[in-house]
Length: 137
Image (cartoon, rainbow, N blue to C red; front, side):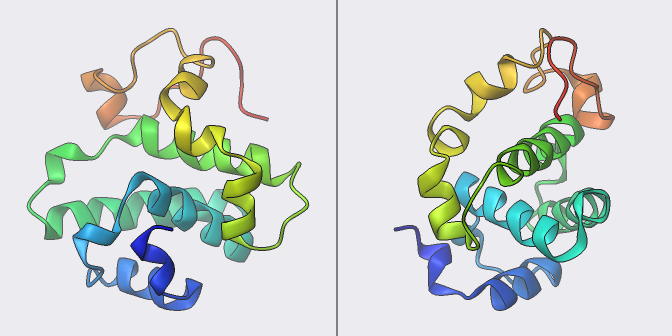
């Protein structure tokens, strides 16, 4: 179990929003959890807006503003949403167990939607690129 689970959803969300979350807690899985919380609380459109803004702020607070990638961020949120629509769980811990590809095969999952390497593309870092292969539904 990852350390971000030591915080309940509310505390995790609040600490991330105010940039006080310990950076050692913000793993790939924690990023997925943040998406799950925001989609659950605010809906997909507001989740995208909230998370993009918050990740930019969080990265800047850590001196890593150049690490932010708009396309990967939005694609990750949309991927979480895709799996949430098919999920029978009501909490992130069970959700990630039910959908291990999000954690263990994330890049491969996104590459099934993109022919562009969105992880290295300068354009993808700055603006959201729509999937060229498969849309997120």
